[in-house]
Amino acid sequence: MDAPRMSWRMPRVLMYHNFGHPPAAGDPEHLFVPEETFRAHLSLLAEHGWRALRLDEFLATLDGAPAPRKSYLLTIDDGHESVLRTAAPILAEAGIPSVLFVPPGVLGGPITWNPVYAAERLSSRAEIAALAGTGMEVGVHSWDHSRMADMDAEALRLQVVRAREVVTEMMGYLPRSFAYPFGTHDRPARAAMADAGYQVSFAVARENGRFAVDRVFVKGTDSMAMFRFKLSLAYRFASRVAGRTPWLRHRIRALLSLVKRRGGQRSGDDQLAARGR
Image 1: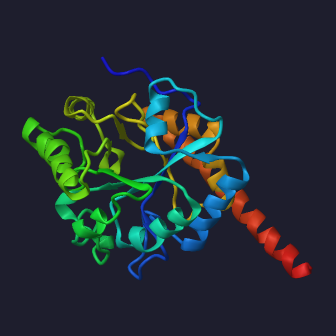
Image 2 (image 1 turned 90 degrees about the vertical axis):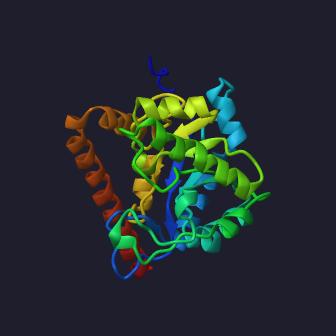
């Protein structure tokens, strides 16, 4: 039997990937968040009273500890070079803790799971190891960024256990958290997390208890209005329902498109007002 659902009022878990401007080949998955946009996100969170949590604090909420009404955990997937170059210094400057999920079997090489991003490289193991002792904790993102569904026991051991052993050797501490590549998971994958001793694992919208906590996918094309909406309970409800009910997904996408259009209109109105001044 699967674990009970997470409370609607759990802290938000934000999911980022890459930082900077998209490559010439394009960014079909909208993974690149410009540096100025990332800074704007952090400023908006601070100005509106959102508190950044350490992983320890987030884990405590899973065990029943109360959390601030407006709180979030900032997570980053994959370990792109821009994380160390751009995101880590910004977060350190702002004093914001975070969790970086890496696939140790492919660190230091190119992106292999999407040919559009093949020119992008991941940080090396040595570069990731340099994060030890900083406010950016490192977790596991499988061995080689494989989808975590329909795997046999041997494959699960590589992706869950061996990957954790290598990250432990890199960082000098035992990783406590895991993030499913592509957000994909099934019951055997979730059971493997529990059996291996992870304290939490993260999905995207397909929430299923402690070993599939839902996250908010922050896209580089999100307007500030969309970012604000993604922090809302309405968005959490919509994304969770869509994750469990495929036939509702097109309605959710229509709602998001409406928010995006309104956000774009607001931005245009602000620019016109500025010109008028």
